Length: 195
Image (tube, rainbow, N blue to C red; front, side, top):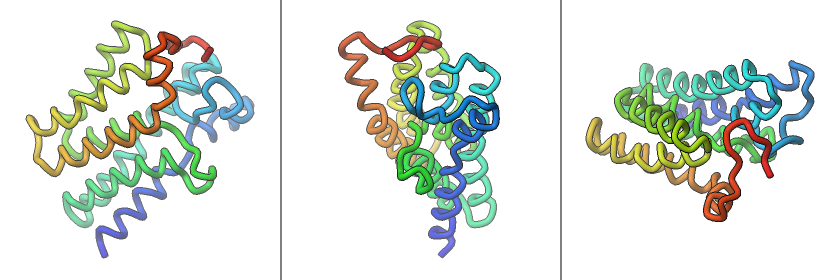
């Protein structure tokens, strides 16, 4: 029962579409109508509103962190891992948006930082390094996702590695279009409009 409640808590918190809510409150309309059509921070940045993009990043990361932290505090580590995974699932496939959500990178990083901070820190630093070198958000995200299970094996536990691997699979599935564009050399750089 605690694991089931952790799953429900995680999904519900994760499915709050902060990017969509913030852009609507700012009078920018539906964020899904511009750029990639995504509700995440990278697409919010395409509005030219850096503050809104930063707020979206923090809130999307925060909801994953809060879900995992609450569940872990109330029912233990395993419940925290379940809630964290479900928060990312909720962000990617929210019931309220007909299961068309974001790509879950910020939420994943929030979950990793709370459940095993060295793993989360390693993933964040990987994202920053790849983004600085190549200026491509999706490439940075994919690198961080791919390396996070390895970081978890080295710096945490097998359970954390399983969580990181599951989150990496979710992330790669949601980035299938980005992967195709990367292979064709057509992926836009950070701040550019999607071609």
